[in-house]
Image (cartoon, rainbow, N blue to C red; front, side, top):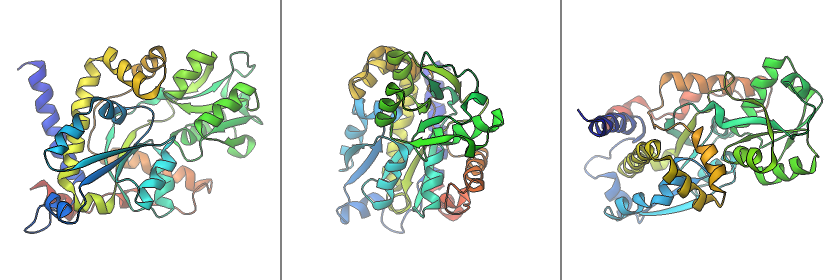
Length: 334
C-alpha cells in the first residue's frame, strides 16, 4: 500500500467517525440538504481566525467548488479571537467555526446552543506567555503582582491559569489586562503590561518582529486543542453540508502536513503577515482533524472545572452536554 493510498484510507476512516460524531439526525423521507434548499438555506457561514486549517481552506478555494455542486454557497467571516466568533455562532451570524479550548467553555456557560463536531490534535507550543526582550522576568513565579495582557476567555486564559498554578502563584495575585490581540500587542510594545499571553500567529509575530522572549509555552501545561463547532440547529438540519466541510478540512490537513512552503505562502497571503512569521507559526501547528473523543471531552471538562472554581464562568457546566445525543449519532452513522 502506498503512503498516499494509506492517507486516503485514514481520511475515509476519520471522516466516517466525524460524520457519525457531528452530522446529526437525517430527517425521515427528505435529505437535510434538500430541506435546506427548500427553505432557502443555501449557504454555510464559516467563522475563522487569522490562522489554521480554515484559513488554508479559504485560501485554496476547494470548499466553494465542492459545495457549489450541491447548490450551497460559502460565506467567510474573520474574527479576531474565539470568544467573539462563538458569540457570532450563538446569535446566528455564522453556522460553523474553529476556536481553542476555553471559548466553548465560556460560551456554553453563557447558554450558547453549540455542538462540538471535531478537533485538531494537541498543539501546546502554539501559545505562550511572552515578555519583552529586555524584561527582567525570568520565571513564571516572577509574574506575581505583574500586569499580563490576554484575551479573556481565549485558549491562553487557561494557559495562564495552569502556568500560575505550576509556579505557585494565585490568580488573584496577578493583574489580568483583558485586551484583544491587536490592542494587547500595542500595550506590550508600549510597556504598559509586563507580559502577554498569546497564540499563533500573533505569538510568532511578537517573536520575529518584537524580539519577544517566551517565558513559558503550553508544553507540559495544556493541550491546546483546536475545536470545530457548529450551531446545534445547523448541525441537526444540515448533516451532509457539515460532512463535506469536514471532508475538505481533512484534505487540507493532509495537504498542509506535506507542503510547508505552500502553507506559508497561503497563510502569508491570507493574513498579511511575512512568510518568516507564518512559517514559524505553521511549524508548531498540529494537523489531523478527528472526532471528539471521550478523552478530549474529559480534558475540556478539566478546563471548565478550573474556570468554574475561580468563578470566571457564571455556573458549572457539563461539557458533554454540548455533544449531539447518542440517538442522533447512531442515526447519522447508518
